[in-house]
Length: 116
Image (tube, rainbow, N blue to C red):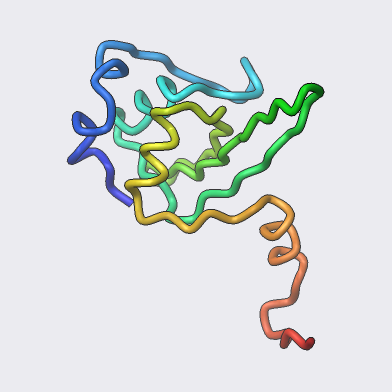
């Protein structure tokens, strides 16, 4: 999905930040690294997986897993939820899939029927 056309509409504060991310350097990226990837021509898949972690004191952290492609390159960028990322997900035509559901779909054979 091409989001480059409306990047300036998403959040003005990230426009001045350039932040590259690599999975070997840190486990999670921020919205600034996602914005940099989009500005550098990476496309976002229309399916976004997510996972929520609960901590003591009723604190929760949500991680979005964005599948990005650019030409024949592919990467999955785990991004910690923040207001910019929430707005991006809300405005893009994405299907949000919990990580557990995505894992079940990958294990299920392509031709199997679901029975209740």
